[in-house]
Image 1 (cartoon, rainbow, N blue to C red):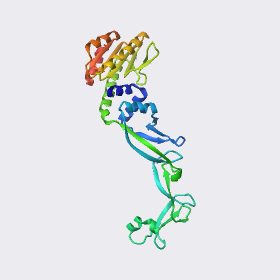
Image 2: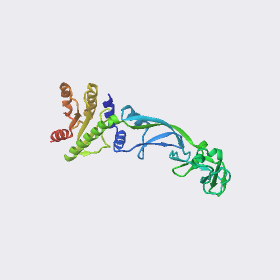
Image 3: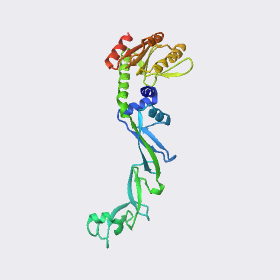
Image 4: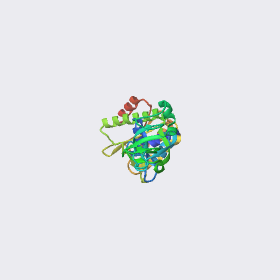
Length: 297
């Protein structure tokens, strides 16, 4: 069932593009909306919808990582923050910090050792200089976001975030899947077929659109490719009503290719003959390409 959900997710146009970007090294970024105070997930500049996130999680392609609380800027939602000290009078960041015991006369003045002064600053007090030139004692802690906005903790957005990442156990299978898609696409293009990765749907008489792993067109003929593990009888049988619906709409493919690493029941395969189906049982890219090349001649 794991691999069926995985392959089903990869047939989804949006999920496939997201997964391809993740395999190529893109990271899932967390962004926080200041308007709604909600957590959003992005891959590059593309937002992952709730539906896509659920689909990728249920398929095992993504897994939840650690949970954490983030402090974010109320202006732009950034959580790449620097802690700063702010003058409570002028509300400006302090640019010069001096620690003192009796009186401060230098750039950094401290009684006793530097280590002792830094370990117990509260006992000695803070002597700081504001950008306006005023000396400040006991300043306010604030934050500055990566865009330069300064704000206090009281104004901050505090959100709980679930981090997500690509499932390492699925990476090998995902990479193999895309290798097969690329190999099949190359052969189809060599035979002058038009292949568009974003157009892999074909409509049946019922009006339902079915997605396949590869769809290629040449004049009025289509080649459809379906990639599966093949050991689940229910999955294979579920293809029959789809192909029947497509055939009733007059969209019977010139060729329907099933690529699987597991052997199908031969009696079952005979049922597919009426739908111009061919099956290659292999996960070797060269064998798959040779098989498709011969099938197209």
